[in-house]
Image 1 (cartoon, helix red, strand yellow):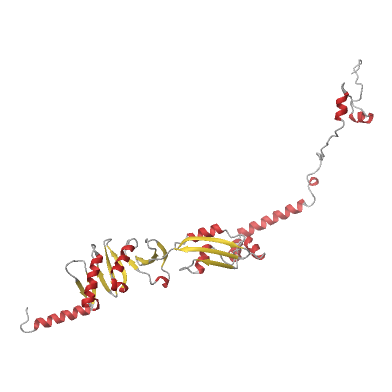
Image 2 (cartoon, rainbow, N blue to C red; image 1 turned 90 degrees about the vertical axis):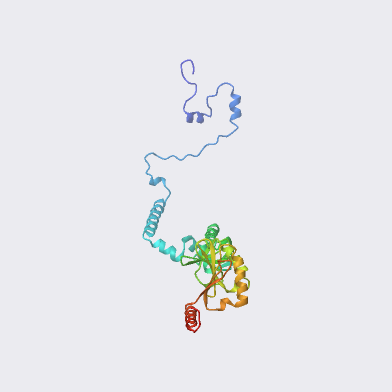
Length: 320
């Protein structure tokens, strides 16, 4: 200000720029230095407060929004009506449909390590069929599904682009059949149930019957091995009262003792070799007593024996 309280230059910036000068304090060298660096101004778009929202949006935004809303409503109705589930059941997931259209459908599955399972069983367990696609197949999920099959001990699933899947599996070895309450299951050597008896592919396996017979499978197999020449004639073993075994040999029941059943079998082998006892009209051989062998005749043989005894008693001089 001057002495009269007035500013020596105009306070209007435009006027000052037109005049070519700003009010500068003493020490004008600083200002001359700063003037060498041009200022960077930000571009700012001003919107008048009274301008409608439509005027601020890019052209076509409304059409896009309405189309998206209609598409969302159509999709919601498609899902709610149940047609989406029917579509996926028939054609697969939409992303698999697109992948198949682009040439990435599953066309070949190579299975390594399959032994007792059928190919269709492996594919069904893994969840792989013609609707699957290579890009969107979850190999970890497929592997977990395979490991849920009791017969499969190990499994791996790999993608081979563009159209192949490779499955490698290790199956548990079935050791015997176990019958309980009329139901037959396939068991491993440790007695674990690994499959159901659904067809004749396991028909040649040994058969054990009764409660806890599966856990006693090693004991039964040892008895079969101890039977020597009679082993091939043993059809099944029944675990009786959780204590002992009864073996089924060609329609003849061989009742073994709780103690030393292998020794009892050795006695039967000697008796069969000497007298052919198993070839006679008998239905059971009881080896539970160490000092004797008790046999049970068939009904016909028992009747014939009873008749013969009666005739013998009627002969003169026969003891009464």
